[in-house]
Image (cartoon, rainbow, N blue to C red):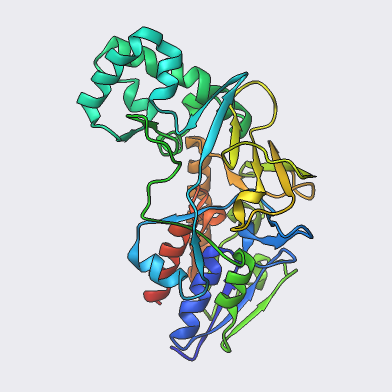
Length: 367
């Protein structure tokens, strides 16, 4: 079987990682990418000022998996990078994930008693999903959680997903928890880093193998998928299957870039948790080790995905759409039983880069 050829559709973290491991196991792999570049949404490039511009918004690699760390460090030198995010609601600024600093502002003198309840319930430094706090036995804790939701989550959710927060799957709501303490920092993983020469260079090394043939600007239809060889598909299933049961919704982002010599804030990213249409702005100077003479601000405004107008970047984490996606998964098994689906688009769920890599390693190991 090791002399057979795999078709891998998509060159993001999932597709490129699968391709590399398969090639090292003796398979030949053909990688096709519909975009004009490899690396999927992690694609980055140097600007004339020497700043890594993450074309599809900031991508910060973090993991606690020794297996994933061993794999990614084979293909890049990584520099430590601890991501910090500031939330802004009107004139109010606070760390994200929200912590006791925000409670102090919202509750005033009542903050200390609520903090004591939270520490006794969950432990100092714990990260607790907001919906868990909203079901706490204490009226004061539930009231504080509801205040955090109004300030931090409700406006952002409505802009980002076009949905009320109550409609989101619990897994999506839990992505930004509440910190039980004054600790700051967006991630807690043991390995938090950026590739020193960028993600695109990292992906080039992943695909640089004599048994891998990669091509870009190549759109794949269902009829192009061979029935006699294994296929890994990382794209949108509704499009692949001709929208037979209707289109799945995706969210896109409109990026506005501003080159400037000014730094934005002490943190790399500011999330706008208020009524302005933008969701966040990132100072790309934080993505380089040296302090550049200028930077680029990337401002993001979510919008509905419209085919031919923008990129489908995020599946909408709502139960009814997950159910429709499951219908497409079942249909695909009937029309093409030899296909494996993986990655954010094909799975119709948010997947961090390290999760995509770990999934890819499992798929390739089982081939």
